[in-house]
Amino acid sequence: MADSESAVYSARVAPGLLASAAQSIRPNTKLIALLSIGHFVVDLNQGCLPALLPFLKTAHQLSYAAARFLPAPRVHEAR
Image 1 (cartoon, rainbow, N blue to C red):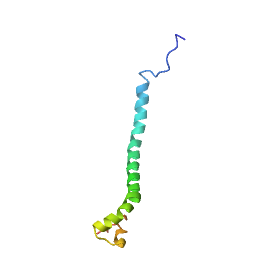
Image 2 (image 1 turned 90 degrees about the vertical axis):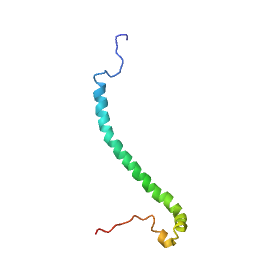
Image 3 (image 1 turned 135 degrees about the vertical axis):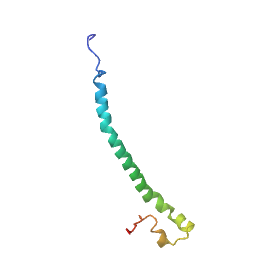
């Protein structure tokens, strides 16, 4: 047993493996961050904004019919 080597990657092999693993992981982190931000915005609109509608209605002197359209996305016409 004294002649056996430990099961650790040698210095020659490990940097190549780590570099290829890091390159394959990096593009996915940007995608995951973008999806996380999008998920946060959707949850914010579905959860917090409807709860704030009565306060926004009184602050901006809107009717309930007008306040109903606050969470809706705005569509701009092309000119």
